[in-house]
Image (tube, rainbow, N blue to C red; front, side):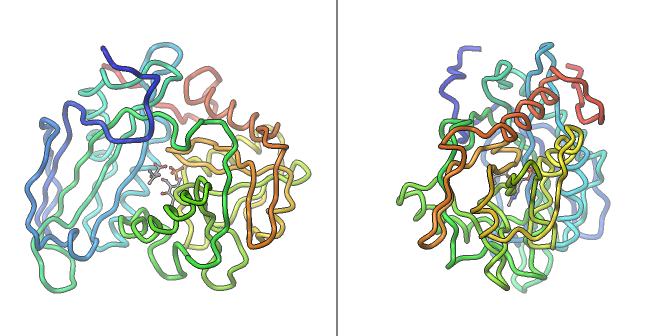
Length: 337
Ligand code: PLP
Ligand code: COI
């Protein structure tokens, strides 16, 4: 295809087709359909537009070294999507229906999957309360859609270590809220703080917990990790942190490589004192952190280079994802075109 893959960034590109499935409240999900990619019609009174009744997922299809198109742990996205639907009062999409929908959209748009190592086809499943409703209650109709976009690196420069700032002013999620699911409403409140940080030259902000303002939660839309004396630390899942699939995979890979991995509260002062730090997510993959600023304190990691543990974890993850390494945990699904 005549497309400049090397100029891809993490941004929107319209592709050929998308998937749509609509269900009335109280009914079972039916089959759904593939339709040309394009705008949709929706009531201005839709639950999603007025009250944010919606969730999304983020996944990637990649072209493996053997030329096949592969998905990474898509069953985990299906399960998280169902959890999120329940939390937001929506009918969960059966996991097999979710997976069939995702695979059909990827296959139908296979020409948009970038060549190996030059990007990925980002997959965006969404579930919205699409029916009109005035009272604050679940919508009478729900729409499940899947669309895809070819993407490049989430942070400029890919493996160039990023500069982050800890926010003392804003929080992403509070106990009992929706931080543990991919609710659409979790993201808009972060846009202004993130934009302000970018104006100041930071790539993103780090959120602390909303109760004690002392423990690291997440890096924008990615999970946080740090390495100290070869032990790997990541914040434990307290309900306010998104249970990232990349996070779970990094922990497994680190253990496979012989590291001790501790899932526990990560004090921001300890993180500033760590040897290496990185963030992890589907969009971010593993992005090394070069520095973190918190008030008057600043930590620089590895002289601005990618740390050895971060590098090893990144290489191992990507090798598994692109079928360069043995898929010992059965994480890869190869699509038959
Ligand atoms: N944290 C947040 C808030 C996210 O939106 C994401 C992206 O999905 C992640 C972490 C990383 O999760 P995953 O690795 O499943 O993509
Ligand atoms: C992802 O990593 O897939 C995300 O959802 C991050 C962001 C684009 C919201």
